[in-house]
Length: 172
Image (cartoon, rainbow, N blue to C red; front, side):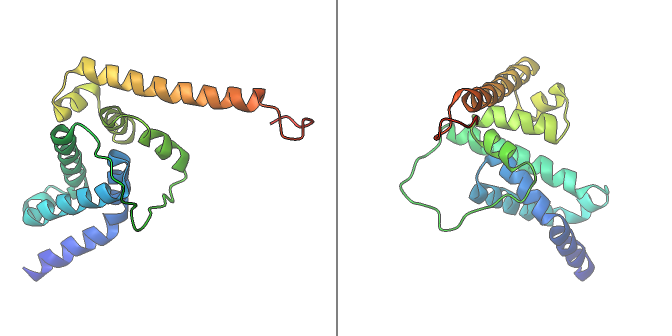
């Protein structure tokens, strides 16, 4: 019994930060990401012996996290605004911090589709099955998300090229 707990604790220590980053990519919010990881690890602890024997517990946790996140946004369907400011903040040490900020501006379903497609490398059929939607909806959500990201990038480039500097003699 003790050996099982030690193995589980080692797994959590070794992969906890990566799972938190994955949760952040899914949710766009550090607090929700922490909740997502905690719930998935709680489920994993109950099934550790069975999952460990398949030699891929991280894939099991990531799948559980994705399904739990889908369940959350299906229940909520809307964001709940609040006047309370979070006490702490989360800083993304990942080299692609700007990309994660851009992903956070997308609607939840589009963000989840892009994460599953490009971060988890799942096919449209796998994403559709996981989310409980059609393959056409997966493609549509991915198209709209990528289009939104492209438009934002082109607008920023245009603003940099067209906007005169404050001194008038430099180009931005």
